[in-house]
Length: 137
Image (cartoon, rainbow, N blue to C red; front, side, top):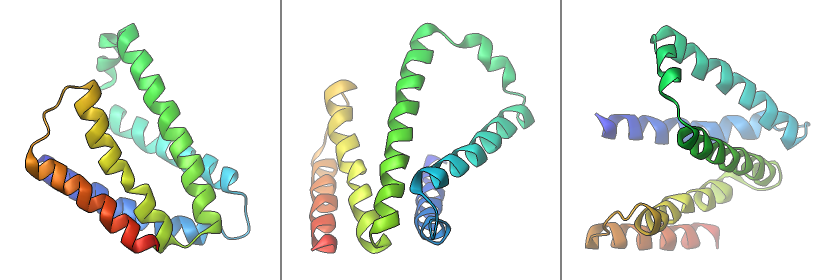
């Protein structure tokens, strides 16, 4: 099932770039990011409440809160810089550079999570990087 979720994520991420480019016309990228964040806030909490997952809040530890907060900070900075890049650059160049995050995540997962890197994963990461460089030149 995770593959379907990942494909849907990729589909919506691609759609996000194009819709954001339209939405950024004539406004600051920071205002756009703030609006996007509010929408996501309502959607995320709506899903939590609709799914009856509010009870999971009791299971949160300091470690959960620390790493989720750090992840939120990284997400926020990612969105801020992504929208700044989209406001001045073409989607066809910004989006591929943003997707270098896949290769970066693979390397970081090996370093910090001790995930094993097989031949296919390494080749895939290298191809993502090569494809990005081809697209942005």
